Length: 508
Ligand SMILES: Cc1cc2nc3c(=O)[nH]c(=O)nc-3n(C[C@H](O)[C@H](O)[C@H](O)COP(=O)(O)OP(=O)(O)OC[C@H]3O[C@@H](n4cnc5c(N)ncnc54)[C@H](O)[C@@H]3O)c2cc1C
Image 1 (tube, rainbow, N blue to C red):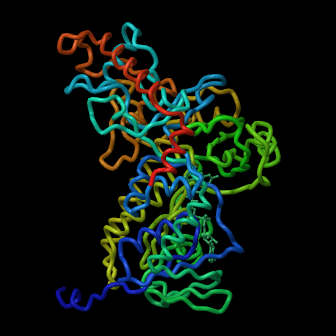
Image 2: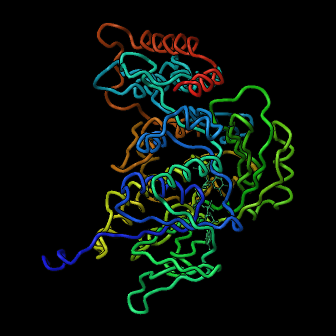
Image 3: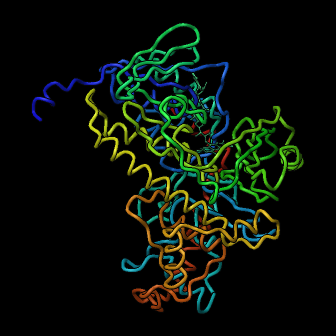
């Protein structure tokens, strides 16, 4: 054993194949963390191009940028980015009804023993005087007022309950990260991999041959080639777990359009006949797309629906995309890790794909192997990543199953046979008003609450300790009013979203 470790050499050469968001996020993070100790090469093909979508994120993206030392002002300037405080879901219960999934927390923790939302649920089941859940979200209030400010770190301030992410131009982000990575020693090669050489006995990747004649050898390979998965699937035949039974949308059409009016600080997701439509407001344009299931509409009809509902004039041709939701059976196979669309895909309903890239990179850095790759590293990586994917899948399915819409696609979604893990969560909430989370859950209780309540799920009883009428001498009803007033005055004092973007871009 000791001898084996003594012969164990560090990885010297690492190849990233693919230069979309996944490839360049990986190159940036690895070159930043590993420095010049590892020789990193990235191969990408302009002729193949990137998927060209993927512009809405969730709050952990900020930690990714921070780790790379990228300032917010630089980032917003380089990517035409905007702030995102949550997602509005229009028509997801029935036509005309809307709910909001805000980032951050609801209300204020006025009782150390009982979370705020337990009191709110108790009120809903009794007097119903508190008002809608949205009234207790500072992110919702700011979104609707078109305002933004950064969270305040003082937990006594209501602004501490705010959290945020970004919308940004994915192509510009990849360009920015390319410059960042090249400055840190990453070599970029323009070319198309058309042959992957595997070791005849072990199946490990030995090298990748480019159609231009060049050969790339490395100790370790990262497959960032998108849906085509050139290394992990085409060459290594790792296998794919198809999740169409839960997430049957399999196509999308995207058209950017001119911005009209103010840049809103939230994403909107609107139900359509066979799926849903996103609207992502950036500084220089608005991103739009219709994600749908082709068993219920045609690409032509989907494109017409999208065109007819754009806020402004289209700025490019429609881009049609096909996909199969699911995940690679192994994300890490031998000396190859798949990151990005090559690892799997779930529809972008909660903007999780870029996050899965980020968490994949961070996990790889934690488990970074030597040349004698311990199979336990891959096992751990695959186990944790699978859990992460499955919990996100459950959260996405939750958005569909309680809908009351009449269209055949939506009726099918309401009748889905859901996973046991999701069923448990729903049962627990409906029976006891409690939200049960796994240790590695990406979305926290406020997110689950927003979607459960938004989709119309109601508990039979409020959680145990939430029936107190007053807390330290102040009636709960009065506490509710205090919170609402605090949210109102904090929101009124915020700059508009555009002012906040401009101020951040000017800041050095
Ligand atoms: C409709 C849709 C909407 C989405 N919206 C969101 C969203 O709002 N938020 C979010 O987080 N995510 C979203 N995503 C996901 C997001 O777009 C991707 O996770 C992200 O762009 C990463 O893609 P990628 O880099 O893995 O793949 P790609 O962008 O496809 O890049 C693949 C790269 O590999 C290269 N390549 C391929 N084959 C070869 C080869 N043989 N040789 C050399 N190079 C090769 C290509 O040239 C390219 O550089 C969305 C996805 C879709 C389909």
